[in-house]
Length: 115
Ligand SMILES: [Zn+2]
Image 1 (cartoon, rainbow, N blue to C red):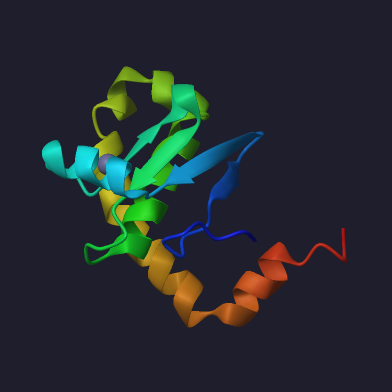
Image 2: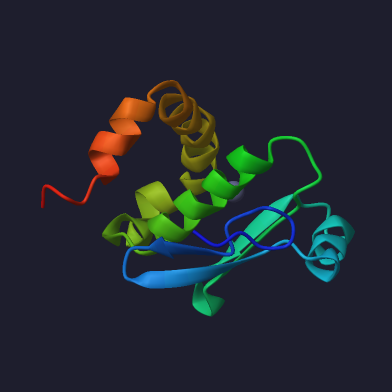
């Protein structure tokens, strides 16, 4: 894993796509001008995150979930698309807690030697 200058993974693979994770000063300034802490732009394969605000890890995971959502058939469902933000906002902190609290699970889920 390669970390960028701000200590955040510089790339993340989501489905078949590799997203660039930006957190450089110009990106952070643009986020702050928009009053955001992070954003995903699936069409450009870019996730931007402000590394200096609290909940940076949760914010990055939140945007990863948005990017994952964008690749799922459910994004085309009118019934669900209106709820994307609510669902992603609810899941991100819980999923992050599960990952942090269960390193053996993360290892087991991501171990590639057994495939
Ligand atoms: Zn969101």
